[in-house]
Amino acid sequence: MPGAVTPRSRTSLFALLLAAAMMNVAYTMLIPLVPELTGRFGLSPFTLAAAFSGFAFAKALAQPVGGLLVDKVTRLALLGVVGLFATAGSIVGLAFAGDGTQVLVWRLVWGLAEGFTMPVLYRLAAQLGTTTGLGTSRVMGWFGGSAVAGMTIGPALVGLLHGAIGFTGVFLTGAGLTAISAVLLVSIRDTPRPAVDQQVKPLAISRTTAWRLVCLVAIFAVIDFVNNAVFSALEPVLPLHVQSENPGAALVTTSVLYTAGLVMFMIVSVSCARFIESRPLLLVAGVGFGVMTAGLLVISVFGGVVMLWVGFLVFMATQPVLYVVARQGVSQLPAHRLGRAYGAFGMVSDIGFIVGPLVGVALYERFTGTTFGLLAIVTGLAAGAALLARRLPARLTGAEDESPAAPVPGR
Image 1 (cartoon, rainbow, N blue to C red):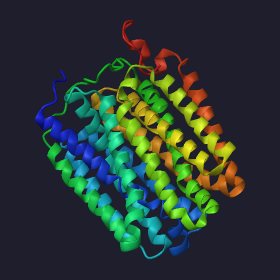
Image 2: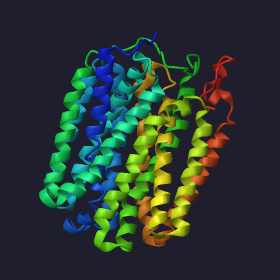
Image 3: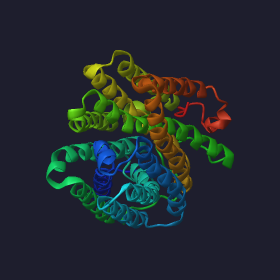
Image 4: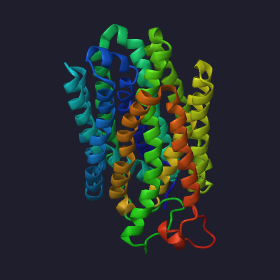
């Protein structure tokens, strides 16, 4: 049974959370550098979108491979060390890119390395949620908050350091932080691996068939897919929109806006676990997408700098709620299947990062300012779909195996 947090498990958890933060610093460095990518490397808007979506495509392909290895190896942390050092190496390659083609190639390698690593980190987070007795939702929330803390630092570092050390220096800094995150995982080498599933309030799905497990993973993977797609659509669109409104201060404005948004994500991420644990996951997802729709409509309908800030911060406040909901849903599977489950989940989820930038740029090229309203339609439909999914037969989610007195988190 899960017990109290011991010094050893506390150290392992701290190392994982700090590693999650440090490895994500480099990820968001690329966002405020969109104007430089279009100028220095001559990237067109669609080539720029390919740099974002190509990363996600490679990451999506690599995640099932990483997931399969997670279920087969016993030294998960060492597997993560290999993946993170490979990630750091790809960022070094990007730092010294000489043209647009090299930028695209190194983004693909970066995506492959990170995709290989993510199932390891998710499995370690779920495992530590069990062995520390803190619960999966809370640890996943902290993991997401830590990751976004690193993402928050990325744009801020660009704003602070770019003038002094330039494009190459900024990404070498990101590569160094990623390498340090790999070293941190070494301290998790002695974390015990539970022989049976000991998640807090899990769905009892031991009698379900394989296709029902796939259905359960798919429901929450699609939630994460939409969440990621809309977020990544804004990654190129929002800087382009800011640049069109205020060309002289586009880099600084984008850096500050994304830093504030990611701080909002981090705050909500570390504080929403108890709320999510006590309510049906699909209900929370539906309401979350509804609030996200309102934020996008504020940007689209009202316009102006103030409403851009308000709408974007509302949007970013709902992102972590959906993030935790999706991962808590997958964590309800038996422990011995979690590696493959997170691999498949991550592949579907990351397709959102592939589709999002391409769709976002296509909409912006055609509709410009009304792009935010069109994205609001997507999130509004997702809200309705999540609420309707609560009416699916219990056999599709494994809820029929719950005892009458137990809550059904997925519904």
